[in-house]
Length: 145
Image (cartoon, rainbow, N blue to C red):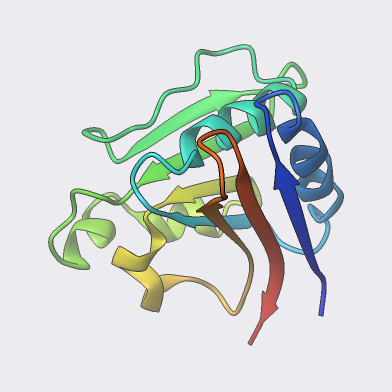
């Protein structure tokens, strides 16, 4: 099982995490980001998108549920925020399966709201606060049920 833990003390240090996640791209197209409000999920996603060549502004799609970004190579990246959904039907309403099955990278904030819809194979990223305000412990794991 692919698993790695990072201890991060600055936004700049997220590059190492992003590069690791990009290295797992052949393994899974879905990355699920777990963490408390303010843990840094969106910040890591912004860093990851930047490393992938996304030139669009990256913001959490809290109200839209999904944002589409395009890399310099013309590849779509989908960014989901399921924080506000109340029931699984809302994920079906936006056609989540079309995104998840597209072969494009799907970055999911608040995946616990749709956990039963996650594919058998995905990358789980857990972000926890460390001992200082700036420290984050980031655990990345390839899930293959």
